[in-house]
Amino acid sequence: MRHTGTTMLVVLNKDAYSIQREQDVILFRNRVKEFAVRIGMGVVNQTKLITAASELVRNMLRYANGGDVLIEVITRGRENGIRLTFKDQGPGIPDIKQAMQDGFSTGRSLGLGLPGTKRLVSEFDIKSTVGVGTTVTIVKWKNG
Amino acid sequence: MREQSEGIVNLVVDNLNEQTIQLDPYALEPIQEYLAGISISRARHGFSPRETSFYVLSLKNAILDVQEESAGSDIAALYESTRALNRLFDELSTNTFETFIKGREDVILRQTDEISEISTPVIRVWDQILAMPLIGTLDSARTQTVMENLLQSIVDTGSEIAILDISGVPAVDSLVAQHLIKTVSATRLMGAECIISGIRPEIAQTVVQLGIDLSQVVTKATLASALKHAFGMLKLEVRKTQPPKPFMI
Ligand SMILES: Nc1ncnc2c1ncn2[C@@H]1O[C@H](COP(=O)(O)OP(=O)(O)OP(=O)(O)O)[C@@H](O)[C@H]1O
Ligand SMILES: [Mg+2]
Image (cartoon, rainbow over all chains, first blue to last red; front, side, top):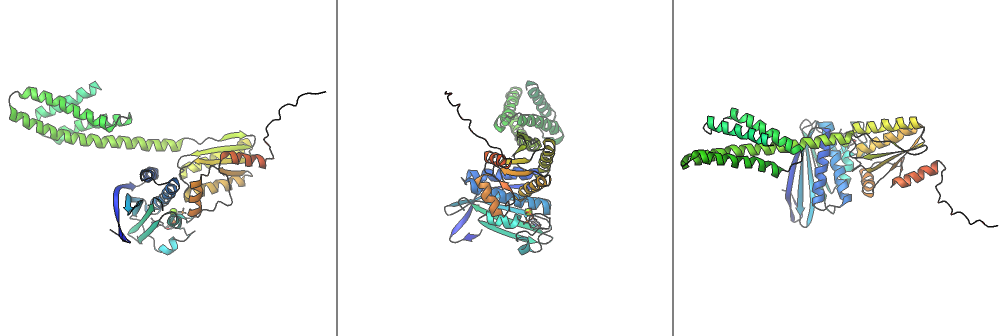
């Protein structure tokens, strides 16, 4: 478990999903929304979180043929939030710095998914190994 | 329902008699099948999991009664058979529960398919003005249909302006945004103009932070303001009628 400052991060509740096809995206987004509503997240942050989740889950489907997602309700001190972990066994990203740039896309798309997601959430972490896979973790605090 | 219950009770009882209460996987199969059928149909008909498992457990009680009767004073045998029956029903109810959830999930999946299939209507709100309300999550396949419908309707009606209302779209991610931008460009290529309305405040903030550039697109907060804008473009004016002046000589 990671410590930030002096207060420890505690996982209150969690749920895991496997994403294999387009329909799973809708179900997953609805689950994320349910969790966000349950902790009393406002509609603006909810929308940002759902949009970020949507970007990452679509990347996972598009570039890695699917993967697994973990939804967690976390708390740190008096702050509550949602943490999402997207883990795939896809081709991996050779140059993360490049992938994080606005407009970079190998899929002839807008290239906004990763950098945009980073702007929408409170914490963003990406790890990728070519030939092994990619793991993206985001946190959105209730009032973050 | 009664028929179903009788069928299942007979299956269980037969199984118990023949196998001296051994959980033979082969004998168990038809029972599992049977219960699976029941719990799937219950899930589809909107029964709660509580009602469904209650049904399975009430069968257990029914069989217990039968066992008690036939065991007579042989308490040891009754105990043994009750334990076996318990094991059997634990297995059965776990299975029933799993099937029930699967049944529900199927319903959900089918509904999502159906919802995304609902054809998006193109409404002719005024001469030369079309409106298309979009509701629900937009995936690639659906947006393709939306775009084709809209373009075809523009041709068919000779309209100048199309309003795409996204009030009912839960989130605009880069994929949806890209589809919207494409639709707007395609409309322009056909010599018409496309307005996007129904942009809620939270959507506006998210789109900006995501980095999507909608500056080339005419966007409005509500369908009403989009319509007003459209009237302006067509040089139409909506006015309150003046009350008739009293006629004087
Ligand atoms: N899970 C992943 N596995 C492998 N490569 C990935 C993964 N996610 C992203 N990438 C790579 O990073 C690039 C940038 O991703 P990003 O989401 O920012 O843009 P995009 O998906 O190309 O376009 P957009 O998301 O705007 O439609 C992608 O083009 C792809 O090459
Ligand atoms: Mg992307």
